[in-house]
Length: 286
Image 1 (cartoon, rainbow, N blue to C red):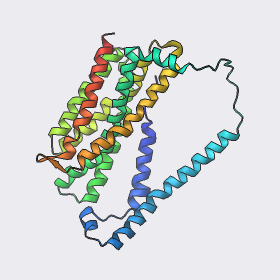
Image 2 (tube, one colour):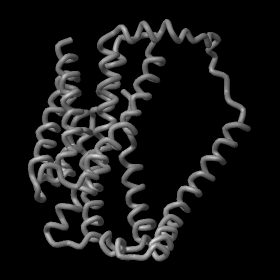
Image 3 (cartoon, helix red, strand yellow):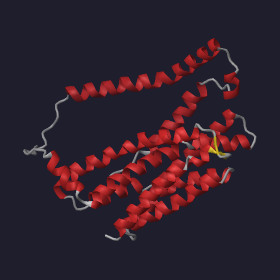
């Protein structure tokens, strides 16, 4: 089975961001920034952007260097003489299979929900911790720490769920994890205190094995089309770029019907988990 996004790399990235980027940004809170004049605000904005841009420039240089190495290095032969690709024929064949077709859809929603739950824990936690009396900066830092805890739980749960796969049908385990995630997400929506934050952190335990499980179920029985099918499943990560902006637009509303928009925005992740439940149940039945 394929592996999901590298949680160890994510943890390292978050640690670097907190200690080498976030720590260098101007600590002024949102309300105070709104009081600045245009010139002062632009100067502070430019300084913060410079802090953010520098690491990405360095990463870009490293990527360019790697591309040059790959371009100049002589690649070994694969020994495979048949490189023919029958795109339309293969596409029609694999998408005629419900197991695969629905797997691509489930993977789209899974990747979207993973990105949403890990991204917007900051906004969710910041609101909760500010209600408890913390200033905005401290609330954001504490939320980031909870995000790191969520990823640690994700890593640990991966081992537990992999062990459970020895005894539980993959479809049943996927559906069970999605049901648990949906219930926790309901808690994220309904609770307006730290309990909601705990629920959101707990969702990571349920997500830990979803990506590789969906991947493996969808590719089962594809035979020679497996490589082509794998490409389609990887392309389903598009969900990670489509769904989070939708949730962000909901959060930007501030409040909806007197209810915190950040809470209500998690209706979207809830819908994603419902889609995964349906796929897990259908595949558990064969």
